[in-house]
Image (cartoon, rainbow, N blue to C red; front, side, top):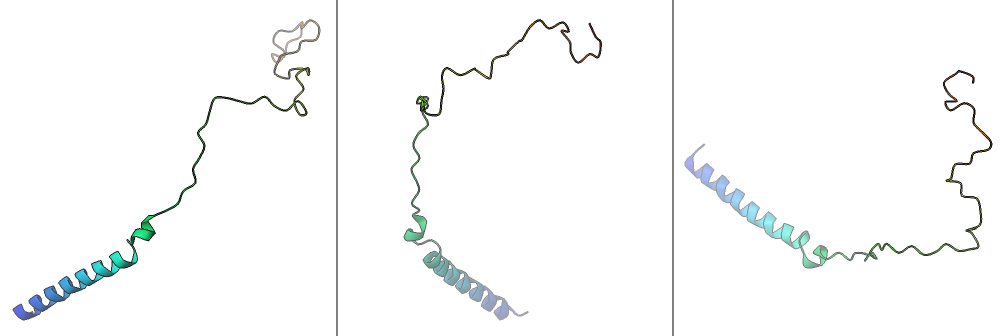
Length: 83
């Protein structure tokens, strides 16, 4: 290539870079495109309201407590041995 060809290619690259920069700023980075409305979330609190008595019976048996009926003769029921 000749010296003039290299200079011409450099000028074309420079002009196309400036043109693409101007076009991209006009299309992609407009101020209205940078604004995004977001939903505001309420903060989480440690307060927990009492459940409705229609659905929650406070006089019911607590299913989280262990219920033992009678004496258990075998302390290790899964060992395979009988008492």
